[in-house]
Image 1 (cartoon, rainbow, N blue to C red):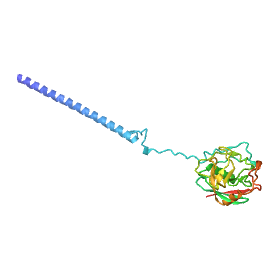
Image 2 (cartoon, one colour):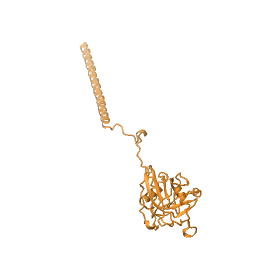
Image 3 (cartoon, one colour):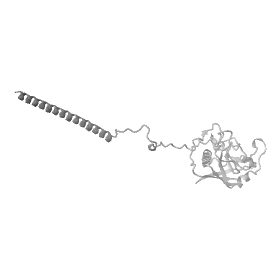
Length: 266
């Protein structure tokens, strides 16, 4: 009887050990399945993010070599001309001219052929150094504004000056524009420059330097060209007899006219 009870106890213990071992194995399998499921879900989510492009957001400050700069338009050479109507200016028989727009190409060469009653000379205009003055001069020449006007101021060794539709030195085209004084050009015999009545009052009057007094002028006038052919003509014009007193002082006794000015572009 004792031996039977001993055997029964041993069988129960064996059964308990087997039951405990099966429970441990079931828990292990459950844990393994849970971990595997988590990994599968994480992998799936990661794959979706990668495929959808949401896994990595662009930096708020992208690398400089990947940045495409926004192109900036260069300012027009005529943006500082300040063309404006000059109310009340006497434009004589030519009449008030419309305020010009900026139309020249500063990368091209403009040559003005000036036909006068005493001969012809050619001036090369510097569109890069004085775009505003050149644009205005070309504009007026193409409108035949200068045709028939006189050189109203002639001083030997100094300048010959024209472009005034009234022939008095007080007229203009009916508009004015800004100076271009620090443009790298200097006075030489044959230089063309704008006449004015003060800062930023350029209009249609211009002069040619014909002597040392003109070369010594202060930097108050916009230089915009140079006589490159026919310089003896301005030098001959400066020799004419002029009035010496009164309102006609320096006006040629016998008028010297600008018959026409034509513009060539290359």
